[in-house]
Image (cartoon, rainbow, N blue to C red):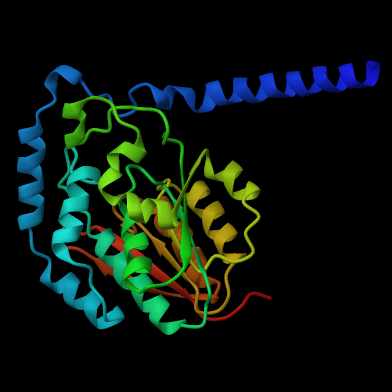
Length: 288
């Protein structure tokens, strides 16, 4: 009996410690992480921003993607998803070109690997779910089995304001935000919450076929994520890095350049007219 009581006390203390850590690290994200003022929400503002973003053309980038990968997603589908997940109020121009890159690159990977029974995809930096859904759509269109494991510190079961058009209807969970794409979410997407340096160690993954890294744009975090993914990939597997933009994110560029300098990956950059860059990294040989 005494041993059982000691165990219960130990378990309770450990649980209280975990809850304290949770409160310290994550709980403030449950309040209003995007600092939305409910009184100033305007649905029309988001519709105007969406129309402006959709009207921008990037023919050179689209031609490069089609030439490199042979696939492009449906623009109308991307624009509709972006209205819920990418059209936000911010100072810089709205860009969601990484959705085209992720869809195209993943479709190409799937076409080149028809014998893989199930594809494991890792994403860091879920945000509202745009990128995860673009990759899920690629799996669906290719009629392939797979899962998209996506990590973020933002909650997915707590209703919050997201700085998006749906804020006009009040706080929503990420599941509610993505309700029009519930079929993709249910079939392919697994949301995980936490800092990547903690969550990645808990996943127990044997293989990561395809990864999109977008949780942080500084050297230490991205270098850690790159090293983790590289340790779980084989030749021809892929890592896509967001914001490979030397003038804005030198730390992220340094981390990617170090990966490419190892000789285990070859990189193919893609850049928009706004000079926002992305790097497609394909593993060319297995590690020692």
